[in-house]
Image (cartoon, rainbow, N blue to C red; front, side):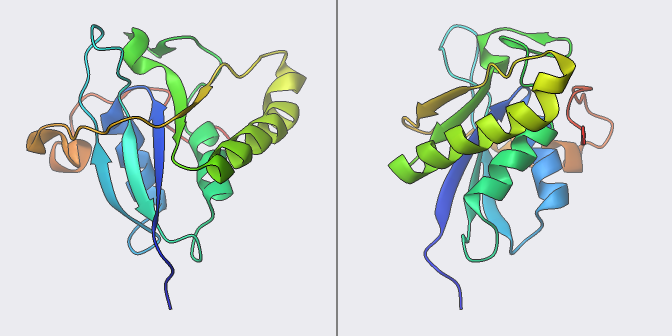
Length: 158
């Protein structure tokens, strides 16, 4: 039996790559309703993926840790060759519990994977605001366009 779905929102550079790696590693029904948000450097929006998930199947903490595994959270407003505020690393929380979990997991990941390398996570953890879907052709873009651009940081780092 499934529980009420929750929403997780992550920004880690180009939303095509963020969506692609989450879909590859969290196939339905573990997470569903993945959508990408539209942005430009002038809107202050971040390229992000919105994931509807069943917390009885996959925990929010698991998604947050996976988010950190799949990009470089130590660069400000940049992922690989993509530079600008829309490419920042951010977690947009939808509940106070998500905010607490995101902060806890961030501290754990920092201590285990980044402090030993002398680097610091700069990911913003903010309350989610309104969501705007990107145009239909952006949805599942890298599955529909396998030769499309993908940022080199969107891979498993550990």
